[in-house]
Length: 580
Image 1 (tube, rainbow, N blue to C red):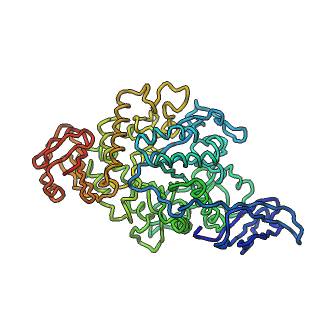
Image 2 (spheres, rainbow, N blue to C red):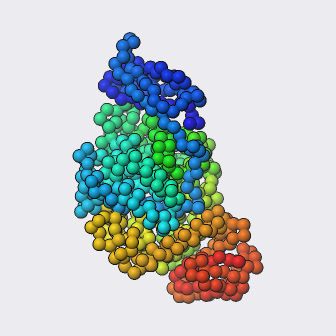
């Protein structure tokens, strides 16, 4: 690794009474830390560059009398591991809630070692989806055109209830047995890679589950914020930026808990901070990951986030990881991105953010009436604020996710608006992300209920009568949407203008929003027409970009347009033209 330092947490009854030693070439114990809980030791090691992968023995003794030994393994890195490439604008991310996607191993639906058992009839229960189910449908994912998979967390969540979503970690180093095993997770990553698909791990730096083993024996009194007692976060993320904010308001936001079952971690504790950073690196190495999605990013300690991002990019200069900052205020999102202009000297090396402002503007822009302040102008206004970002092209853009109503529901099940949203998502700047089932127009009839939003993908269970993977039983419009998405995604792979090019857009007028993507000799023109009838577009306005190019070919249906004259655009539609 770039860093030759390793800190080992040792937990055992009165372990602090023992003294650890290592008699192995190229490994030196630099410091032994004893904390207030005698059941913990923290051992700082320094590894020489000559150190080889393999096992070494840690001996624990008193007065030269050995009480126990432990075999510790240093694993060999894959060739080129440090230079691994992360996800980028050439990718399209498929977001999957593993419990709700496909159940290929019925034997692990429940586990005698884990508290919550299988209950598919309950919207908030464990439905049985697993890693093997994802492996078995990698061909479908690849055929659709997705190149990255972001899985909602798959680490152990041994909570009594509502454990399916994965956001209450009870062991940072173990895949939940109801999803599979560590070995199976690694197999998923390896088989996905063979099909040109990377794996993005969902990590939670901010909190754990109340049943985490730490909670039964905390290493230090300050391991959990608010002295280990539930204190609700205010969710007022503005307080950490507000120059007039009271210190107590900042504390209520950053140190508060989400819910009583999610203890809030204190990353100001240096041992905890190191544990989390090393765990992140371990998973990248072990599972061959292409990046992270970081849950509730701004809720963690600011200084720690700076350290965490620096540690990752030091080890992996080309990897990508994206933070969740759920606000529609562009300035608050941009603050966290690497190279963004800031009001202070805070250092962040976070490459990417989830673009929540754009998500909201696309939905509102398609639904709201066209006037001087609303409609397509709302999309334009958000993108025109890209000067606040260090790299707007590296933002992850999306129409919905696991925490909000499905996009087809948000758009009032209007298929034409849905197509417009998808075309915009796959042609504007950024890295598109799609939630599983969007391609077959999945909806959620119970507004806001997460258990319904995260409905099982049809065909993922042996008893399902409808199969979204094969198309059997899908309604005609669902099949049409699926084919539309497949064609659009497969075309996107071929367009360097979309995946690498500049974005040039024009202020919306007369129900039209026009923008171009340009890279070298390739020019793509996207025409969004929100008018409720076929409307003529005068192309003279775009002469500076068209530069005498007079022909536009619709990339989805091959229809030709003469751009030297006004062109007619179908009502409520988006057209993608390859201009030459």
